[in-house]
Image (cartoon, rainbow over all chains, first blue to last red; front, top):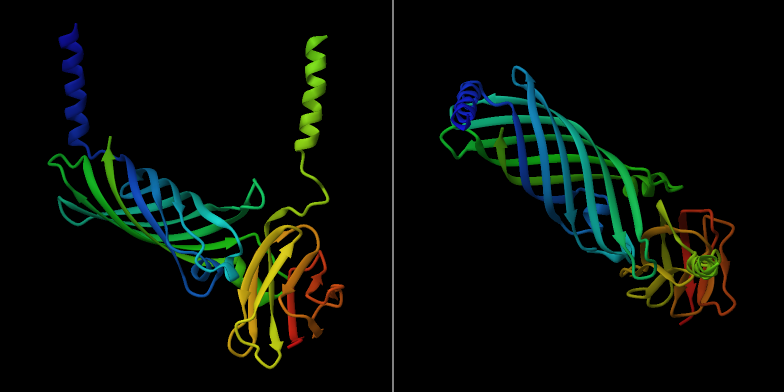
Length: 195
Length: 124
């Protein structure tokens, strides 16, 4: 009986192995850096953190990816960001992806999507802290390099742009733009497992 | 009977732990931004702080020409822009700004988020 189950298991394995596995899970290390003239770029340092993603291709090389990122930073300039401590960035994202096979070892992927972002800072004056929420438009690319023979484990490197727009409003248009929009450059290094 | 006695105490503790409405709190997704210029003989490197009650919102020092920019989290309650020198006069984009009794700070009205002080004169 056990032999039979093993036989079935290996059969299914070999069937799946012949077909390219579509679904993957990814674990990442991340950095987020604010660029340009805005409150995150001038007020905060680089965020470092972790991330996870589940992705799959459904039609030819087109698919979807669900991402989660979390990053931690420090306040660089109090006069810009305020007297707050340990800002933490959380991002939940849904992205469309296009995968292009360069050769047997090397894949490229394009990502476009939207995310919901939360920036929560701690305070020494109040327990609950201060938080800002927003939505982001995401544009990115990924390079994937297979590190096993059966193409089930990949090394992933990815740059990404986040165009964040928060719900903050200030009476003055210039100050409003400075405190409610930010561009973040993200770098990811990770491992992807196909199953 | 005994549980009722306990819950009575619990209610009291919850009441004591509930936030005091007189004290300012942070308002999520809101920011305050103050900019302006100090007019005095030595306008450079003058420290200034922005408070909401006991919360320090933000602080900075003026640049070489006396101009300054201050931004920080939004809070409930009245804000106070304070200096370590007495203010003799100021001009603002908002009419609701008032000088404090000791002339060391300017009170900023609750409902506004942007302030521009074209000039603040400080006593030497």
